[in-house]
Image (cartoon, rainbow, N blue to C red; front, side, top):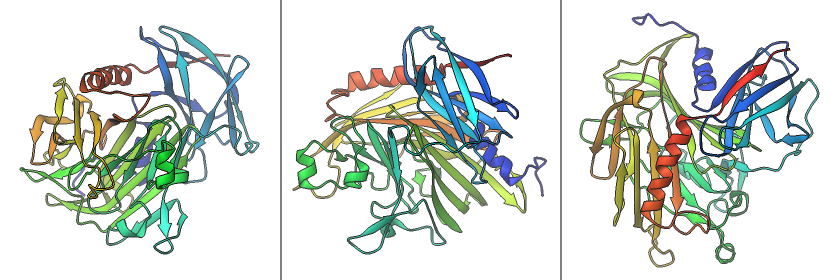
Length: 418
């Protein structure tokens, strides 16, 4: 093997566990009951700020987070499917410059099911027939195409503010479902609301992605345009976590043949309660038995936002890109009206090879994987029809700037020593 980097396949997934600009802290074995201090170092308030405690060799079955006498909803996640929880996650509201002391209790006793209300939801609906389907949490295809085998063409996930789906085919495009009022809807509408549900202010599909990147899909780049993730040896989807605090969904392309190389790409999508945005982690590596190597640095990828008719474009020329525009959401222009949407992507500068790039259907960044095997960034979206959201490009673009600042300034965590 040519690479001097030799790590195990499981260590690749530890990158997925560890990488985040959200607040994280490692809890070592032996800790059961302890206190942490979470601090907002910003002069602006934070709503639903994500906090993640990574569990290092801690064998537990449940956890509880306390803010004085108030219990904060939390969840434990097994990210690598080895039967052991890897992370404890929760969200917290913080005033400007506020510090909160929280008590964490870890237990070997099973948690009570349904003890917290779900604020997020994820689903993958396999078709039994044209009119019936069943929920599953994993699916795989050697052809790389299960687009028509699933009710809404791949995994979908939502918060009360926004819903996303990922096409299970060579596009793997991220598509949008916009809300009118804040609530979870996919368990009732399964992406396709009835006329009766639409009359009750349910949301629906708001974007026609066609062959574009949609919002923040990672694609290949052939020198002239963004290209799909094909051919592959196998493509699989997995719902890792389904609330109550966050959803985690993986799309994995095994054996993607691209630019003379053959490799695996794991795209992980994380959505937190109270958020309209999604954290996207793409891990790219070549595998030989139990060892992996990085891709050549000169291989470029692309992401961004699709072009929209009647639109305004925004960029801060430092990793933030957005668009506000109007288009038909589906091909049926008789039953469905045009939708006005905002799309945004924030890419940390360490991944950007070239900015202000475009092809016929996209505004793009060209990206390269860094020395820890990943290309990671954030995506967000809004629908003009939201009763709680943004009604014009100026307000949406102001939101994008504030969103970027919030990402770059997560809350900080420290443990109180015994």
